[in-house]
Length: 295
Image (cartoon, rainbow, N blue to C red; front, top):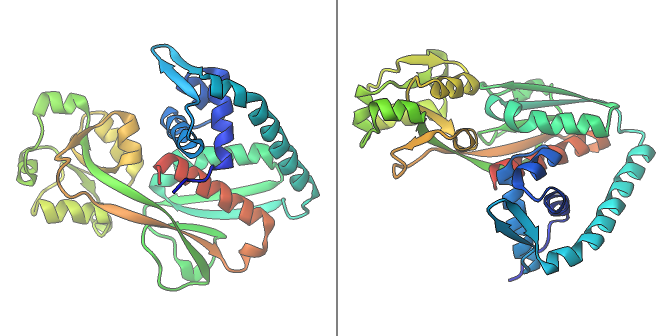
Protein backbone atom coordinates (compact mmCIF):
# COMPACT_ATOMS: atom_id res chain seq x y z
CA UNK A 1 0.00 0.00 0.00
CA UNK A 2 1.46 3.36 -1.02
CA UNK A 3 1.85 6.02 1.65
CA UNK A 4 0.54 9.49 0.98
CA UNK A 5 2.77 12.51 0.95
CA UNK A 6 2.76 14.94 3.84
CA UNK A 7 2.76 18.42 2.27
CA UNK A 8 4.57 19.75 5.33
CA UNK A 9 7.63 17.80 4.12
CA UNK A 10 8.04 20.23 1.19
CA UNK A 11 9.75 22.74 3.45
CA UNK A 12 12.31 20.10 4.48
CA UNK A 13 13.00 19.24 0.83
CA UNK A 14 13.49 22.91 -0.10
CA UNK A 15 15.65 23.65 2.95
CA UNK A 16 18.00 20.73 2.25
CA UNK A 17 18.07 21.59 -1.45
CA UNK A 18 19.20 25.09 -0.47
CA UNK A 19 21.60 24.31 2.39
CA UNK A 20 22.97 20.99 1.05
CA UNK A 21 23.71 19.84 4.65
CA UNK A 22 21.44 18.52 7.40
CA UNK A 23 22.79 21.02 9.92
CA UNK A 24 22.28 23.91 7.49
CA UNK A 25 18.72 22.86 6.70
CA UNK A 26 18.01 22.37 10.40
CA UNK A 27 19.22 25.91 11.13
CA UNK A 28 16.90 27.30 8.43
CA UNK A 29 13.89 25.49 9.88
CA UNK A 30 14.67 25.72 13.57
CA UNK A 31 14.61 21.93 14.10
CA UNK A 32 17.20 19.23 14.74
CA UNK A 33 19.30 17.65 11.94
CA UNK A 34 17.78 14.26 12.78
CA UNK A 35 14.31 15.70 12.13
CA UNK A 36 15.39 16.89 8.68
CA UNK A 37 16.84 13.47 7.91
CA UNK A 38 13.68 11.66 9.00
CA UNK A 39 11.37 13.92 7.03
CA UNK A 40 13.44 13.54 3.84
CA UNK A 41 13.37 9.75 4.19
CA UNK A 42 9.59 9.88 4.72
CA UNK A 43 9.13 12.10 1.66
CA UNK A 44 11.28 9.86 -0.54
CA UNK A 45 9.34 6.80 0.61
CA UNK A 46 5.99 8.50 -0.08
CA UNK A 47 7.10 9.65 -3.55
CA UNK A 48 9.03 6.42 -4.22
CA UNK A 49 11.92 8.40 -5.68
CA UNK A 50 15.44 9.25 -4.51
CA UNK A 51 15.71 13.03 -4.10
CA UNK A 52 19.22 13.39 -2.64
CA UNK A 53 22.61 11.67 -2.82
CA UNK A 54 24.42 11.86 0.53
CA UNK A 55 28.21 12.21 0.44
CA UNK A 56 31.00 13.10 2.84
CA UNK A 57 30.41 16.87 2.67
CA UNK A 58 26.62 16.95 2.54
CA UNK A 59 23.77 16.21 0.14
CA UNK A 60 23.40 16.69 -3.61
CA UNK A 61 20.11 16.66 -5.48
CA UNK A 62 19.51 13.73 -7.80
CA UNK A 63 18.22 14.47 -11.29
CA UNK A 64 14.71 13.69 -10.07
CA UNK A 65 15.15 15.96 -7.08
CA UNK A 66 16.51 18.79 -9.20
CA UNK A 67 13.53 18.51 -11.51
CA UNK A 68 11.11 18.84 -8.60
CA UNK A 69 12.64 22.00 -7.11
CA UNK A 70 10.70 24.53 -9.28
CA UNK A 71 7.40 22.77 -8.61
CA UNK A 72 8.13 22.52 -4.89
CA UNK A 73 9.08 26.20 -4.73
CA UNK A 74 5.85 27.18 -6.47
CA UNK A 75 3.76 24.97 -4.17
CA UNK A 76 5.56 26.36 -1.12
CA UNK A 77 4.91 29.93 -2.22
CA UNK A 78 1.22 29.17 -2.78
CA UNK A 79 0.96 27.61 0.66
CA UNK A 80 2.55 30.68 2.25
CA UNK A 81 0.13 32.94 0.37
CA UNK A 82 -2.80 30.81 1.53
CA UNK A 83 -1.62 30.95 5.15
CA UNK A 84 -1.01 34.69 5.03
CA UNK A 85 -4.41 35.33 3.43
CA UNK A 86 -6.15 33.24 6.05
CA UNK A 87 -4.22 35.00 8.81
CA UNK A 88 -5.13 38.44 7.58
CA UNK A 89 -8.77 37.52 7.02
CA UNK A 90 -9.30 35.83 10.39
CA UNK A 91 -10.53 38.07 13.17
CA UNK A 92 -9.82 35.40 15.78
CA UNK A 93 -6.09 35.07 15.12
CA UNK A 94 -5.42 37.33 18.07
CA UNK A 95 -5.58 36.92 21.81
CA UNK A 96 -4.33 34.50 24.45
CA UNK A 97 -3.90 30.75 24.19
CA UNK A 98 -3.01 28.87 27.37
CA UNK A 99 -0.96 25.69 27.01
CA UNK A 100 -0.08 23.28 29.83
CA UNK A 101 2.61 20.68 29.12
CA UNK A 102 4.87 18.23 30.95
CA UNK A 103 8.19 19.81 31.83
CA UNK A 104 10.15 17.43 29.60
CA UNK A 105 8.34 18.80 26.51
CA UNK A 106 7.96 22.47 27.31
CA UNK A 107 11.51 23.74 26.82
CA UNK A 108 12.98 21.37 24.24
CA UNK A 109 9.99 20.77 21.94
CA UNK A 110 7.20 23.30 22.41
CA UNK A 111 9.12 26.50 23.16
CA UNK A 112 10.92 26.64 19.75
CA UNK A 113 7.61 25.94 17.99
CA UNK A 114 5.82 28.68 19.93
CA UNK A 115 8.57 31.20 19.18
CA UNK A 116 8.18 30.48 15.46
CA UNK A 117 4.41 30.84 15.80
CA UNK A 118 4.82 34.24 17.48
CA UNK A 119 6.82 35.43 14.48
CA UNK A 120 4.02 34.33 12.11
CA UNK A 121 1.12 35.48 14.28
CA UNK A 122 2.28 38.34 16.51
CA UNK A 123 -1.26 39.03 17.74
CA UNK A 124 -1.51 35.59 19.37
CA UNK A 125 -0.24 35.57 22.95
CA UNK A 126 0.88 32.13 24.13
CA UNK A 127 1.03 31.30 27.82
CA UNK A 128 3.12 28.13 28.15
CA UNK A 129 3.21 26.52 31.58
CA UNK A 130 5.19 23.34 32.19
CA UNK A 131 5.81 21.15 35.21
CA UNK A 132 6.55 17.53 36.04
CA UNK A 133 3.31 17.50 38.00
CA UNK A 134 0.13 17.17 35.87
CA UNK A 135 -2.25 20.10 35.65
CA UNK A 136 -5.60 19.82 37.42
CA UNK A 137 -8.17 19.44 34.66
CA UNK A 138 -11.06 20.31 36.95
CA UNK A 139 -9.88 23.92 37.08
CA UNK A 140 -10.25 24.18 33.26
CA UNK A 141 -7.66 26.94 33.19
CA UNK A 142 -5.90 25.83 29.98
CA UNK A 143 -7.04 25.78 26.36
CA UNK A 144 -4.60 22.99 25.42
CA UNK A 145 -3.19 20.39 27.80
CA UNK A 146 -0.59 17.68 27.23
CA UNK A 147 -0.73 14.71 29.60
CA UNK A 148 1.38 11.56 29.98
CA UNK A 149 -1.63 9.68 31.34
CA UNK A 150 -5.00 9.46 29.62
CA UNK A 151 -7.49 11.35 31.78
CA UNK A 152 -10.83 9.78 32.58
CA UNK A 153 -12.81 12.99 33.04
CA UNK A 154 -12.79 16.69 32.23
CA UNK A 155 -14.37 19.00 29.67
CA UNK A 156 -11.68 18.28 27.07
CA UNK A 157 -11.47 16.50 23.71
CA UNK A 158 -8.72 13.86 23.60
CA UNK A 159 -6.15 12.98 20.93
CA UNK A 160 -3.21 10.62 21.30
CA UNK A 161 -0.25 12.36 19.65
CA UNK A 162 2.88 10.36 20.57
CA UNK A 163 4.54 7.70 22.65
CA UNK A 164 7.48 8.89 24.74
CA UNK A 165 10.13 6.26 25.39
CA UNK A 166 12.57 6.34 28.27
CA UNK A 167 15.85 4.65 29.04
CA UNK A 168 18.66 4.52 31.56
CA UNK A 169 21.42 6.94 30.60
CA UNK A 170 24.78 8.25 31.84
CA UNK A 171 27.48 10.42 30.33
CA UNK A 172 30.33 8.86 28.35
CA UNK A 173 32.73 10.29 30.94
CA UNK A 174 30.90 8.56 33.79
CA UNK A 175 30.95 5.26 31.89
CA UNK A 176 34.70 5.56 31.23
CA UNK A 177 35.28 6.02 34.96
CA UNK A 178 32.76 3.52 36.32
CA UNK A 179 31.69 1.16 33.56
CA UNK A 180 28.19 -0.12 32.71
CA UNK A 181 25.76 -1.99 34.94
CA UNK A 182 25.20 -5.51 33.56
CA UNK A 183 22.04 -6.20 35.57
CA UNK A 184 19.74 -3.88 37.57
CA UNK A 185 21.31 -5.00 40.86
CA UNK A 186 24.60 -3.47 39.73
CA UNK A 187 23.06 -0.02 40.19
CA UNK A 188 23.63 -0.44 43.94
CA UNK A 189 27.34 0.16 43.29
CA UNK A 190 26.75 3.05 40.90
CA UNK A 191 25.68 6.63 41.41
CA UNK A 192 21.99 7.03 40.57
CA UNK A 193 20.03 10.23 39.98
CA UNK A 194 16.48 10.02 41.25
CA UNK A 195 13.45 12.12 42.10
CA UNK A 196 12.56 13.85 45.36
CA UNK A 197 10.20 12.01 47.68
CA UNK A 198 7.13 13.99 46.58
CA UNK A 199 7.69 12.86 42.97
CA UNK A 200 8.33 9.15 43.50
CA UNK A 201 4.92 8.41 41.96
CA UNK A 202 6.30 9.28 38.52
CA UNK A 203 6.55 6.37 36.08
CA UNK A 204 10.32 6.83 35.75
CA UNK A 205 10.81 6.61 39.52
CA UNK A 206 8.54 3.56 39.76
CA UNK A 207 10.44 1.81 36.98
CA UNK A 208 13.76 2.33 38.76
CA UNK A 209 12.36 1.17 42.10
CA UNK A 210 10.71 -1.92 40.61
CA UNK A 211 13.81 -3.08 38.71
CA UNK A 212 16.28 -2.29 41.47
CA UNK A 213 14.45 -2.48 44.81
CA UNK A 214 16.11 -0.57 47.59
CA UNK A 215 18.22 1.58 45.29
CA UNK A 216 19.21 4.80 47.04
CA UNK A 217 19.81 7.71 44.65
CA UNK A 218 22.95 9.70 45.28
CA UNK A 219 21.17 12.79 44.00
CA UNK A 220 17.47 13.63 44.02
CA UNK A 221 16.10 16.35 41.72
CA UNK A 222 12.75 17.86 40.77
CA UNK A 223 12.97 18.34 36.99
CA UNK A 224 14.09 16.61 33.82
CA UNK A 225 16.22 19.60 32.91
CA UNK A 226 18.14 19.24 36.17
CA UNK A 227 18.47 15.47 35.71
CA UNK A 228 19.79 15.85 32.16
CA UNK A 229 22.31 18.46 33.34
CA UNK A 230 23.41 16.21 36.20
CA UNK A 231 23.96 13.34 33.74
CA UNK A 232 25.91 15.65 31.44
CA UNK A 233 28.20 16.57 34.34
CA UNK A 234 28.88 12.92 35.13
CA UNK A 235 26.74 12.56 38.26
CA UNK A 236 25.52 9.05 37.42
CA UNK A 237 22.65 7.12 35.84
CA UNK A 238 19.17 8.57 35.34
CA UNK A 239 15.98 7.50 33.59
CA UNK A 240 15.51 10.06 30.82
CA UNK A 241 13.32 10.36 27.72
CA UNK A 242 15.10 9.22 24.56
CA UNK A 243 14.39 12.47 22.72
CA UNK A 244 16.50 14.33 25.30
CA UNK A 245 19.19 11.72 25.97
CA UNK A 246 19.98 10.54 22.43
CA UNK A 247 20.71 13.98 20.88
CA UNK A 248 22.82 14.80 23.96
CA UNK A 249 25.04 11.80 23.23
CA UNK A 250 24.40 10.05 26.55
CA UNK A 251 25.34 6.38 26.87
CA UNK A 252 22.44 3.92 27.29
CA UNK A 253 22.61 1.38 30.09
CA UNK A 254 21.07 -2.11 29.93
CA UNK A 255 19.33 -1.37 26.59
CA UNK A 256 17.85 -4.90 26.43
CA UNK A 257 15.95 -4.36 29.66
CA UNK A 258 12.25 -3.51 29.33
CA UNK A 259 12.09 0.25 29.07
CA UNK A 260 9.29 2.49 30.32
CA UNK A 261 7.16 4.46 27.92
CA UNK A 262 4.25 6.86 28.25
CA UNK A 263 1.47 7.74 25.86
CA UNK A 264 1.19 11.46 25.24
CA UNK A 265 -2.35 12.83 25.07
CA UNK A 266 -3.36 16.22 23.76
CA UNK A 267 -6.49 17.72 25.28
CA UNK A 268 -8.33 20.68 23.83
CA UNK A 269 -10.96 22.41 25.94
CA UNK A 270 -14.42 21.80 24.48
CA UNK A 271 -15.25 25.51 24.33
CA UNK A 272 -11.81 26.60 23.13
CA UNK A 273 -12.09 24.34 20.06
CA UNK A 274 -14.34 26.95 18.47
CA UNK A 275 -11.51 29.51 18.51
CA UNK A 276 -9.37 29.68 15.40
CA UNK A 277 -6.26 30.76 17.28
CA UNK A 278 -6.52 27.76 19.62
CA UNK A 279 -6.82 25.35 16.69
CA UNK A 280 -3.80 26.97 15.06
CA UNK A 281 -1.67 26.60 18.18
CA UNK A 282 -2.92 23.03 18.66
CA UNK A 283 -1.87 22.11 15.11
CA UNK A 284 1.58 23.64 15.61
CA UNK A 285 1.98 21.72 18.88
CA UNK A 286 1.09 18.43 17.18
CA UNK A 287 3.53 19.04 14.31
CA UNK A 288 6.36 19.94 16.70
CA UNK A 289 5.79 16.85 18.84
CA UNK A 290 5.58 14.43 15.93
CA UNK A 291 8.64 15.89 14.22
CA UNK A 292 10.82 15.71 17.32
CA UNK A 293 9.51 12.45 18.79
CA UNK A 294 9.43 10.49 15.48
CA UNK A 295 5.93 9.16 16.10
